[in-house]
Length: 141
Length: 281
Image 1: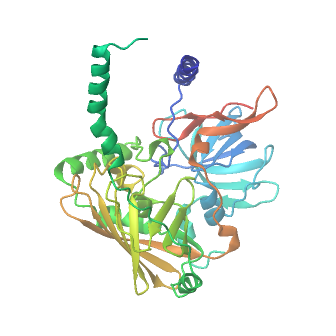
Image 2: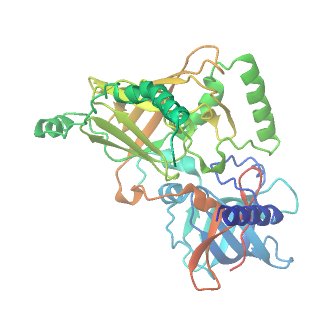
Image 3: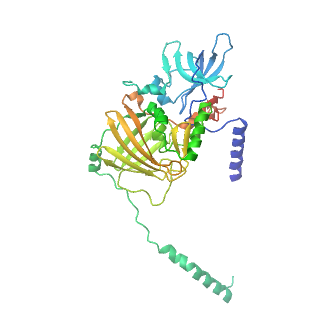
């Protein structure tokens, strides 16, 4: 039995390594994003991962009008902070919703990912922000 | 089986050899179990006399940011070099992952650099701090008069004993794992390497402002005790109530497998901790 468990463990580890995955979920710095730049992406929500410590949005769209749409991965803070600081809800956006997203791109050129600054839901005009320091403002309700 | 004289003699010797250990096993006086007494009505009534720390407390992150420059820890020479390297790496876009593998931020880093809320519960003999985001973020502070344990059993949040001096909760924490970082940001922090001691004076500085005055003694990485105050502000709107947050889900995405079962599957992460790819549905 122990040999079987060991074999399964070794296989799982091998599969993980083969897939290029590392097990590092954590609270992390956002220094991999370029805070001196911002870009705007228009597209449709594919999926929102409402998870700790960092929510991610997959959005199919393009940054400029003349490029083919692709999947972009936009990362942000935790669900609790989004609720407190940016007016978010778990159902703030749903797959298929048209959105306009402003974000700081990754420093490494060519990566289709970024750090969320603001998301606008096109159908309702609702704007959701993501600055965790905003919640320090007095009178926040 | 027959036993000859040699066999009997051997058995006798064996019994004689064993005798002291048998006697030894019976001899020690068993220490009486220490019982945590059930709280009395008076104990509960005394809770009502404590200051009101209810609600959701959030860290003042802008002050955490400022103290990186205005109040750095007195790192020793070796630690200072490592921290400088971490600053340089962060500046270059390669932030060091201080809090990897979803381990607790631990004490004192939870108090120092958290970006998430906490709540504080009073019960007889205990103050309990519950943090958002990690699932395992929990501090038990014993206020029942006990001391620290005779035998160290290190944990991420250490062994905390507290007492009230007026409206200030004074907390003394030892027995923190040596791997627990002393962090000043999510990208700069070092393992305390053992023998860390944290003394806190927690009190309301205003109606909705809580101060944690910390003194951190970390002899293997600091040249002297480091004092810092961390600020938390209160929110009472119900929509800010803390909900369950499990850090490990950051590595995962919800999917339905071939059997129709709802399961979590891994996403791809970078060495710096951010998500770089999510498997298609």
